[in-house]
Length: 88
Image (cartoon, rainbow, N blue to C red; front, top):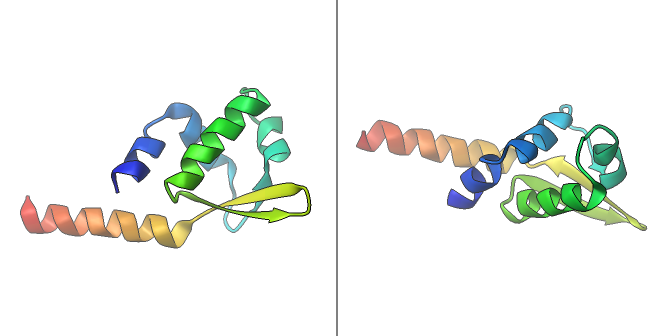
């Protein structure tokens, strides 16, 4: 859970996450095209988001496509809400 919140705590990663439309899969080039960051910077942020479970990824040929891992995020936020309701 802490990895998710750490990953989402960065403004650049938040912007990358908001780039995705519902159900959309994007490759690095598509994300770079709408970002103010360099390709290496976008790749770095995508790695952090993927390792935290925020994004899923799949390599297709030479391209890697990313998508928002909505089920994992929903579970994480539901667990956070449940904890708050139970303990605070």
